[in-house]
Amino acid sequence: MEKYIYTGMEGYLLTKSSVLMKRKLSDLIKNAGYTITLEQWIILNTLWDNEGLIQTEIAKRAFKDKTNLTRILDKMERDDLVVRNRSKENRREYRITITKNGTKIFRELIPLVQNHNEKIMQIFESDERNQLINSLQKLIETMEE
Image (tube, rainbow, N blue to C red; front, side, top):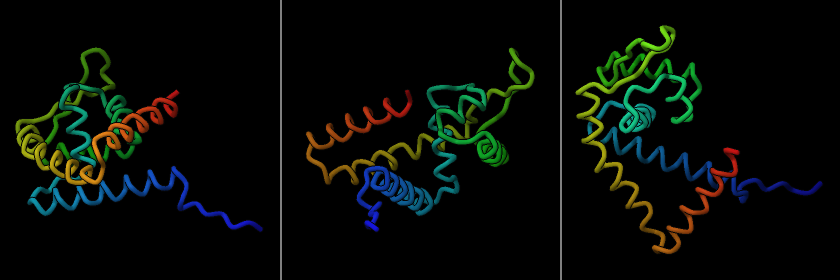
């Protein structure tokens, strides 16, 4: 039987690089003295330009399942990062908004996250980085069809 080497496959390499980037960013946020998780940061980021999204839309944009998102939002609400407001259009839905505290933390973390990304991406020449971005966008577009 032929040996199956999955560690050289693109999907494995993309997943591993994503996990490692997330892990390093989580550690960076924690070491900077913040108690929010990377998942919470992603949700704040999703809401930043899309204030008042319903939970279903947040789940879709943040790549979270609805059950997991509900758990995360419960904690974020307890920690005064977001508020749930019943939707006027549909009483079964809640629109999520960022609190002043959530806004403050999000703004403080932006430079930290940007610096983290820039440090990692320094390994690429400018044209390599552009090619990587274009390739990843192409892959995402294909997978979303």
